[in-house]
Amino acid sequence: MAEISMSKARSIIRATLKKGREMELKPLSVVVLDAGGHVKAFEREDGASPGRFEIARGKAYGVVMTGMSGSALHARAEAQAYFVTALNGAYDGKVIPVPGGILIRDKQGRVMGAVGVTGDTSDNDAIAGMAGVESAGLVGEA
Amino acid sequence: MAEISMSKARSIIRATLKKGREMELKPLSVVVLDAGGHVKAFEREDGASPGRFEIARGKAYGVVMTGMSGSALHARAEAQAYFVTALNGAYDGKVIPVPGGILIRDKQGRVMGAVGVTGDTSDNDAIAGMAGVESAGLVGEA
Amino acid sequence: MAEISMSKARSIIRATLKKGREMELKPLSVVVLDAGGHVKAFEREDGASPGRFEIARGKAYGVVMTGMSGSALHARAEAQAYFVTALNGAYDGKVIPVPGGILIRDKQGRVMGAVGVTGDTSDNDAIAGMAGVESAGLVGEA
Amino acid sequence: MAEISMSKARSIIRATLKKGREMELKPLSVVVLDAGGHVKAFEREDGASPGRFEIARGKAYGVVMTGMSGSALHARAEAQAYFVTALNGAYDGKVIPVPGGILIRDKQGRVMGAVGVTGDTSDNDAIAGMAGVESAGLVGEA
Image 1 (cartoon, helix red, strand yellow):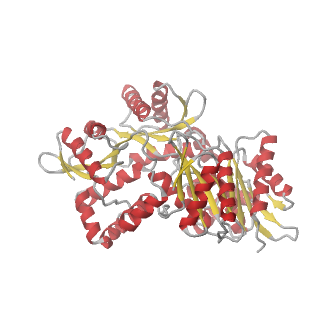
Image 2 (image 1 turned 90 degrees about the vertical axis):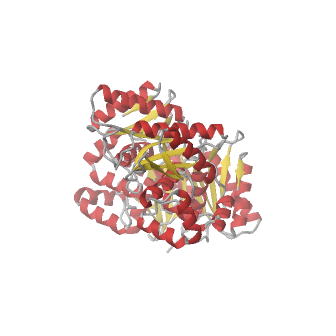
Image 3 (image 1 turned 135 degrees about the horizontal axis):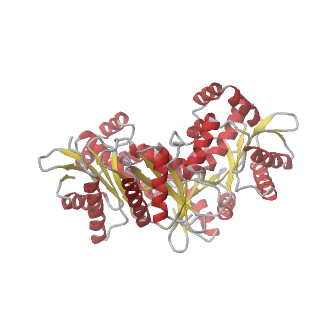
């Protein structure tokens, strides 16, 4: 797999937070996972509730483990809640199937990891995260 | 975060129980968590069932970890059950998404912790808990 | 079983904390469990570390579930660590086998519950807890 | 409790990694937790093994929950392995009792959170983390 560097992870987080400030969103929390679903970097803005790491990771983890975007997982949860419940049995309950989980691909389309964003509405979370991925010169799938 | 004192926690619990007696509610159990979701104080009235600590904590824990009130979590659970199921994966099954979980804020609006009340109907639990928070000179969000 | 009342639980906690202040101990946390091992009341003094509820409960839970005092469990842990490890398998890892867990008996010798104290040395925790039990007119076994 | 800011958390991580490069340590991973044990920021250097987040967090989590430094927990684990095993029952297996977990205090001595460092020897991890805390103008207890 193409490894996402710490430098790229930092860039994604910074640009996501910057976009959140521009959009005047609530305090955001942003995680970057590698292609194996393991935490590479994370930041939680001041004023965010304490449990935001787990939500951010849950959004990104589901995305990288299944290869489906947060929106696709969300649509599946709406249509077949039992399927996502079953996924959570398989993945120790660590999948949160809502927008804000974004697959990160390189220019060749290979998955390098995922971003998870939480703090505002799920749709706004996804917009901020996409801005972060793109500003790092990578391709996002929200 | 602003730390809630043991003295304030005691006051909240006493006033919540007093309100419960005035309203002639069933025996109540009341927990106060700090801003990190950790137990500061708890009391269970005589005649309450033995497992009430876990319910009180579950109501308060979800509230402090997500920054959403018990009513807001309840509405989310009604609208998107899979989301709250997923939250419980992220938080090891410790979230109980019904009224009776109340965010505690200081006068500046900073979250100091949460109260969790259980024993009567969820709505009555929330009324008693709000009375407790307010009698301690703090601001509740039920 | 003889149920311990909320009023007695409060008295035990207050007297334990008072003893701790007299002995100039570090901030204490005190739990009272009923005869079924379920939380009846708890308080954590200001300045105690956030994870003290779990330690206090672990001391008291082992005591009430096995009918052995904290000192007896401690001696067993020193002599046969594997036995206490196995107990923790049986009791979901919730037993902390050190002094500070105290069986509470009524005048007829029936177990009414347990106190768990943590914050200073385990031996000082036990001294404070015994003072709390005795001041409530009950019999402690530390 | 005094909240650690995202800005301070970033500074601690950067200075810890810088110290690691100066000492020519293996790739490091560094987490900063708040005073409630919740993740504020994390970075994992390129080349570190994928499971380093959990180790960094385990070092810092034990420290903040118990109020004991990583070295103190380590000494306790060496002297009374059963005690630390029992702690992990209480804290759902999230405590890693070795150096590299550092309490962060403000100038008044209040605990603001903890740093967890992993990647090289535990003693080197602790040296790098202490440099990080001090460079942010805070007080570390390793």
